[in-house]
Structure formats: C-alpha cells, structure tokens
Length: 287
Image 1 (cartoon, rainbow, N blue to C red):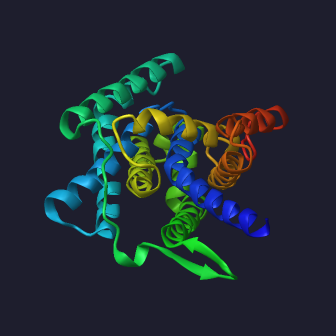
Image 2 (image 1 turned 90 degrees about the horizontal axis):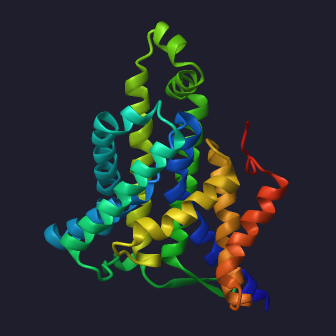
C-alpha cells in the first residue's frame, strides 16, 4: 500500500509539473497583462508539432527540439501580439475570449490538414527511457526529468519577475501604462516580450507533453481546460501559485484515477470547486 501511494504521488507530481509548464505562461500573461488568451493551448500545440516535425524531417535529437519549440511558439506569438492581440488589450473580456478561442479552432484545423488526425509519436534518447530503482521502488526516468525541468523553470521565472530590473518594468507597465511611458519605459516592447515568454513556455510544455499524454489536433482544446484550472487554483500572476496549484491538481487527478476510478475523471473539478470556495482568488492570488 505504501509503495502504491509513493508511486501515485510521484506520477501525480510529474503530471502536475507538466501542467505547470503548460499553464505558468498563461498565469503570467493573464495576471500581469490582464489579457485573456485562450489561444494559449494553440501555442502549446505548436510547440509539440514543431518538436515532432524537427525530429521527423531533420533527425534532430529530442533535447535539441525543446528550446526550438520554445522559440517557435514565442516567435509566432510575437507576430500575433503585434498584429492582432494588441488591438484587443483595451477591449472587453468577451471580445478577447471569442477571438482567442477562434484561433484555437483555426490551429486545430491547420494541424489536421498538415499532420492528420492521428497521434504523433516521438523517439526519446535512451537515457530518458525506462525507470530507476530508488528505496525499493521504480520511478520513470522521463517523469523525473519533467520534475527537474519544472523546478528549473520555477526558479528562473521567480528570479526574473521578482529580482530583476525587467520584472520591475513589467509590474510598473501593468500598474500604470501612462506613468511607465512617461518614465521612458517602452511598454509595447515589454508587453511583447512578456507575451512571448508566456507563449514560449506553452510551446515547451507542448513538446514535453508528447511522451506523457500524446499529441493530436485536439490538444489545444483538451489541455486548455487543465491550464485554466491550474491558473484559477494558483491565482493570477503568481508563479508560486501555478506551481503549487499544478502539483495539487496533478496529484489529485492521478490519485483519483488510481484509487477511485469511478469518479477519478471528476476529482480534479471537485478540487477546483473546493479550493475556490475557500480561496476565491486562488491559493496565491491577489485582488
């Protein structure tokens, strides 16, 4: 029983860390820029298909495709931010929701046209396959890799947003754009970089997710639900909140499906309701 609990906790944490990488960019974008970007799932899907295409067409190793997936999603997001999203910053929430969810439909149709409707397999390097034995239990190497990557991203994001000049500029631009511009800050560039960072992390998460959950044209819709739940539970604009919320939801989801499979698929929604009843702004959200 103890071994089963340990394995479930480990697998749940690994799944939670995958959700964290996928969702933290939206938390930053939505929390700091006040822009509801439901196309976040499409950027994650773009990162996944970029990794698949690079491995298939050019034979690049999996690890090399990860930063390229980040850059591809970031570059496309800058193009969209400069040409389309910027026009919606001052619009109402409904306009933002309708426009960005429409982009997810377009992305799904495009992925279906180019890659088909089937799952996209990838080949991991040998050292990321299999499992290792620790304390008499076997743990998946790739899931350990996911946890390490998520911890590294958490540290880098927290340091960037809280301890650097750029992080201070982002907070200043969000608090009062006119004052920030009067002080000489290039608010448009700051918003573009922030948007690219959030979307790039989504692309990285999409590439990392292929081995765990697969990749098909419905990816942008399916995981958008999980991403929104993580953001709501963790609190807008909080890296710590996204991390803790993703870990709780990942462990809860895996534990529910393992121990109570009859209601396992609904447990993550029950956790969402329970947490928001106690903390309506999320675990680390601020008004």
